[in-house]
Length: 101
Image (cartoon, rainbow, N blue to C red; front, top):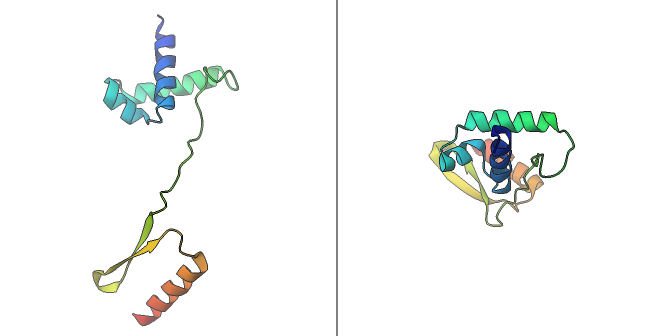
């Protein structure tokens, strides 16, 4: 198998597993930089080609429902805020806390 085809397989495999070049390299022993270069080369050679010849350019991220933001308060105290907390209420809370310090 030619080097180009081997690298195409590695690029496709890393994308299908949702791994970064660094993560995939750590699992396979390949250099992350080489994988990035080949990903770039293959995409450049075949822009808009078939799904097998190109790599997805985005990954959908989902935030777990229990994800929280953490607000560090004066004196080293921290307050966890649910991600579902209303943005305008959070702005009011921050203003209130800034005024209290």
